[in-house]
Length: 290
Length: 227
Image 1 (cartoon, rainbow over the protein chains, first blue to last red):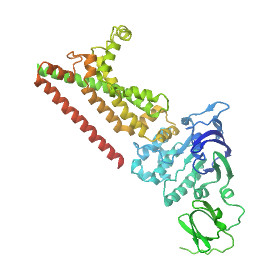
Image 2 (image 1 turned 90 degrees about the horizontal axis):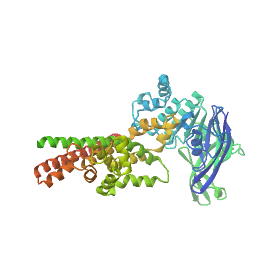
Image 3 (image 1 turned 90 degrees about the vertical axis):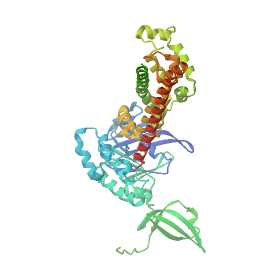
Image 4 (image 1 turned 30 degrees about the vertical axis):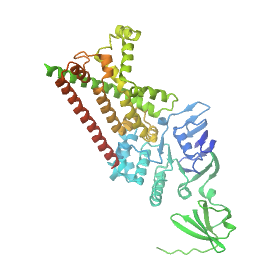
């Protein structure tokens, strides 16, 4: 079991916000930290990795104490077995793909491991390229591969896919899931994309202003359990336009824009940019092969 | 006769520049790294001290060093008695003076090179279990090669060309402290324009070649990084 009790003052645009976190998460599970920017998501990852010291609390990963303010334990990042994947990848520009992975290898006898991970992440063909010659998606894969080489007890992913386009993101989400299950890795991922959370998370911690707002499985949190809808999508409102006496609300679901007719009363709580759940109760979907 | 003293003076000039640059590299890397990374409130003070030789007349610097290292004063006496090292009017003294005088030319490019690297390169290396020294040599220095090259070459060229500090601190002792820039002054004073021109032209061409080399190489480096 992994335990996380953290406190820290966050310095944001709106002054100082105290971060207070107390949670546990299971071994081998993929936990997503979800919330708006400034909620403290990345700060939590950095504290787990030892790059930032909390004011107080406890970090226990796989029954190993990494930080405990009451016992004055604070392992340096070098002593914590983490695999950290940064948003902008942080690959070493002077090293090839293979050298980036070799640099992460503690025991040079385990060189086979590098070959194995290059193969799993489909990077074998690119192993002699420098990072500057790679696309965003490829760089992300190298960053993930490099983190895996260290055989981490916990994999920390800081919005790893946010800089990629939709198609690449969807593909890498699948790969990430496959790899996470393959190694049965305890993983904490930071995301602000509901679609991503639905797809990847086994457990979600929703944060707002440094506090845990809700925690549970994705459907418990975003499902809106009041509705027993058969069809349910999450999306974002991109436009609200008036047409005679009704309003046409355009919602971006994945890459498609869905137009929904609403009344003035219904749109009162809606505004452009708002994340919404789109569901329908009583209708019979027609499935056509394409 | 003239040829021999010319060769002696030029080789002394380059020996001084070479030794100075080597020491500056050893000082400049840790100092530049510290200045780029530190959040210490006293950082501006340290930066001002490093940059002082840029604005101070070389004669001022030379004068204070002459006084400070003179065996008549406590520190100079201590050096003389315990380490048997006399820094005034000696080659060793010129090296010390040149290191101080050319310090900003080495530290500034290295500091800006380190500052331009993404901070999370260091953090990524820490999470991979690497020590600070390992990170510096494996992950950071190889990525600031253009800055290192600029620092090395400019410091070298600047040391070759310095005059005021050398004259104050070293004087004009043939084979010990007489470098090319001093020799030009000396030859002109004795109305020996031909010999002065020989030194002047040599320095002129070497300085141009060095700067051309830096700009050509750095352009090449930049291209390689962008492709």
